[in-house]
Length: 144
Length: 144
Picture 1 (cartoon, each protein chain N blue to C red):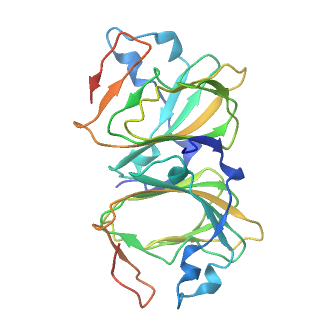
Picture 2 (picture 1 turned 90 degrees about the horizontal axis):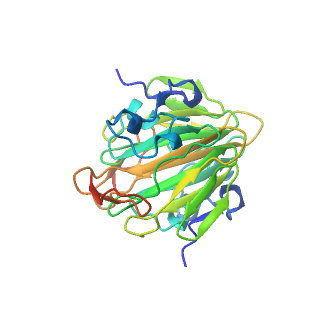
């Protein structure tokens, strides 16, 4: 049976999935990234809710934007830096950032602080329809 | 221009919209409920992200379930009580609860504590397709 309630910080954390690729891009950014998936654990299919821990030096993803999927980040703990088309901006607990589908605003969060940062990341799921763009890397556009 | 980043607790809080109805149902549950909409503020259309403050005695909604929309709640502060088909359960900061579309699990959160409770509530948007059921009240099913 699906576990529909729980405590988010008690969910088992998994290492970043992209490190399992045969030839990961900039793996040094992701060795300190761990996540749990309370949305999936609850049986949700229409959007993902990921609880993401970024150790110092690690990033939430490569800088990217989605053509079809909306995305939203809420900072739960720590002081990660948002990097997007407008430059860099230090966030703090309670900061949010929204990335509407197709906005062309390549973004990620990177933890330049000395403490862990913890994020809640929500993204709609339109698998097979979405294309992801990575403006800083030799990657994609990637159909997802 | 859409404000795509900010601090979630600095957004202006509005009283519960259902109190504006001509004949609101159980208004005493909603007089202490206030919310901001950081998802909408960010220009998102595929899911809503609501920052909800429940003063003591107030509730997040009537007990309900959605036929088409997934819903997820993360407790940011305080100790609201989840009421659903399984009964009552006190939650705390970091608690989550997921409600997959069509699960038939009528739910709401009510603040029986003496301090404010603060929630992040995420729900997919399928306006025109969703039907909401209210098992405790003479209301609906309501096409939304």
